[in-house]
Image 1 (cartoon, one colour):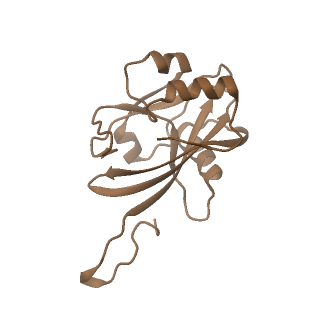
Image 2 (cartoon, rainbow, N blue to C red):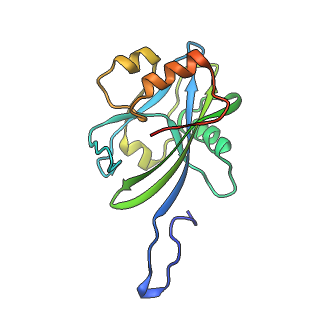
Length: 178
């Protein structure tokens, strides 16, 4: 990705922090269940909240050059699950945090979009080799199942946030996640 390294000047290169614009999809099925992947890569973690065991994460990934955040979220849904996104995704949450990404510090600029699909059958054949290597499984979750689970989710308060989103609807402005 062309934006990953900046200000490289020969042997005395000063490396700035990598910035990673990322789009996440809060993808709900007709039963208001959220689709999540169970992933594990102990070399990728939040230094503020280190966790090296498997955890559950939404569909998503890096925004490609020339693409906007909603387009990236929809593209990722197609690539990772083959699920169609019905209607226009709504930007509901945002987060910036520094992550340790395989030994490098990366500033993640994440936007989370609420969207719906009309089916629940998953096809993960579009996952690339790297994604397959860290993906342990996937499933649909209700907000109540997430809140009652002892497993790790990203964001960590996902059960509470998802329940509020389903109860109150999308916020007028994206909410900042901590």
